[in-house]
Image (cartoon, rainbow, N blue to C red; front, side):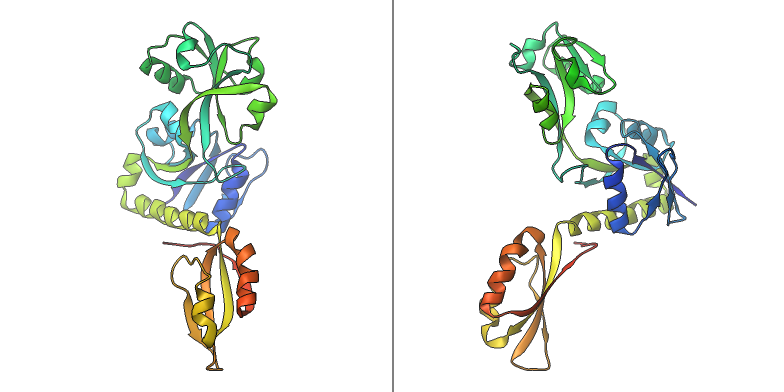
Length: 289
């Protein structure tokens, strides 16, 4: 039996493959291939535009897939959300789906869009958002590159942004945020009810979440003089209490701890000054809570 899984093709593909590799799944794909090879005979991966994945999951064409919460909402599909996977092509920050206009536009709120023209890939999401606020505007589908259409072709755009750099480069400003989105693992409801498929999907959830957790953590080993153990350990903002092990010399003890990687730069010098020796920092592949 195989689990058919949809993976996002395009800007998120490299980050997705990297996450799966840390989870133990190695994908190989040529630039024109939509069916990558993976080192797990129980997986049947297919590369799809993330916009399409929610609908294919709901229809049962694929059993599960990774896509943005924004596309799940835009499609309005009925799928089972397995977990959130907080990663993206540039940062670990969520993306925002925003309404933007030219810097010099008189439009200040969504109500100012009455009778205006809006370009977006998120047609259904935008129409629902406007309808809930009693605003009637013309919403047209755009094949991307919406930024260049303002203000000559349309009055406003609805796009996703991670850093806002593209909007600033085109002299655009954000009027409102419609939605905040991260990547989600979603499953077809019939597949979720299937015992084997659900078990496989749950295994993916554990491994992918573990890889996500590990991405921002490191392990740190060190030797501590027993006489200064409490003083040195008080410097550690540990994920849990440090693991302590006796050494051959009874006056020394070994300590091991998991830390946020951003803390280690300042901690290692402080630990060394406090009397710790043999400090070893090492990367982590998976951290399962």
